[in-house]
Length: 242
Image (cartoon, rainbow, N blue to C red; front, top):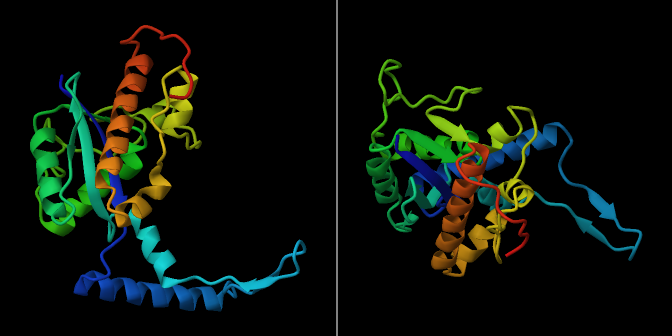
């Protein structure tokens, strides 16, 4: 069985794209209307510490930034993956997201199990949504349930997607980060100067390599976590931090 360990990094929707930009502006205006109706538009807030006031605003830029986590409009910046014990490879074409998706499915078609942290609710779902939008047919079928390559997103199972987060909490409601599980198992943290919340800022600064390196570390950590959870690796010495 070929196991595919993966992690992705995503960025907001492209407001410069005519279709995406128009759609996001429309959805933003609709959201403002709903907030107004519920009287949730930000009001002036007084801070006791310095008696200053400021207006809490729901800006368009903030709304767009949030699309990083929505495959409907957000974009895949990079996909890092490793097959079994092979070295991690990173696929990233910042100006050609479609190519990044195509490269992923070429490798995925040769594998039998997807392994990742929160991969069921985020990574794989995001990739599938972007595949539909960009017209990239997955190498795994999404309609024929009898196919050995049927990409099921069903919960409470570990095939064809093994989600280390869900398996760790045994499908409870907790959302546990990869770093949390890694440190519990004595595995070095993959977070080194960057985490998911800073990817967009790094991207705007042109730090694509740093983002890919961070993504690759997550894959290495996920693989180490999976091996411990599946009892395929002996218990390491306790080692926290770097």
